[in-house]
Length: 340
Image 1 (tube, rainbow, N blue to C red):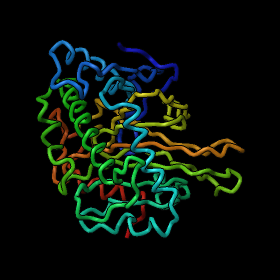
Image 2: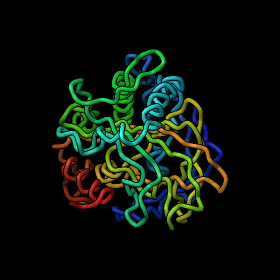
Image 3: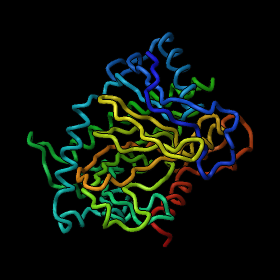
Image 4: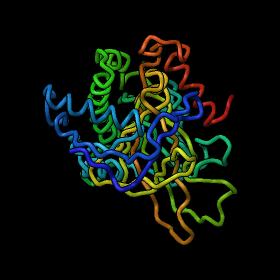
């Protein structure tokens, strides 16, 4: 069933695109779409369900850039299980987390722990008040955090399993997106065939926002600065509210947290790829109100094409010049972490 949520958002182009989007409706809601017809519990999708999903996702991604998917097959309990083991890691002393720092893994420089204020998703603001752990590599022979769940499962086992679940869901969403534009599904699926290998930079990112004293924060500092995502699409799992989405007028409004739903948004490469047919929208996480000492957690699955994939406009136009997925990602990381 297709339901508009109560929060209103507006379509917007991100800073790297030229499209003004002034032809879109001035006011749109974040759609909630039942993905049960292509749930991970099913082997395939019927033509009828595919056609329904195609129409609904096309509307969401061309007008809003965000959509809530329900009944995906990934449960709220699965999400909480991953968040629990992640929080166990984050609550450790810094000296126990340092060996797992981002940049310490030779096979992929993005894999690992990101400390508080290390990243600036808005380069014009102070460092973000959050920690993260990026799972890009699934190798068993690299260094993994030693924390375990009460069920004695390891950090590696829990994150690898959830990564693969997210991978399968993202490929299903990409297949529907291809049908949205009347494309052969392989146009999007082929360049993502190496997710989970050294040839692809897709990342499962555990995010932890510790308690913040807003009065002690630096001027202009946020929990997560305004940004648009870099790759194809993002799957976001939230335990609480806090995310804000930029409106067409330039203001930000709160996006809700719907238990059991996955929030999917278009990222920058996909907007280029589709010649602005799908839109990538800026978003952020503000500091909590004064006196609010609550923490916040989320899990984001950032889907990227294979590093050597050449991204060209799928409509055959030259609206954007060709770019390799890996090269584009490196450029965006340099904005967030600083150029060497």
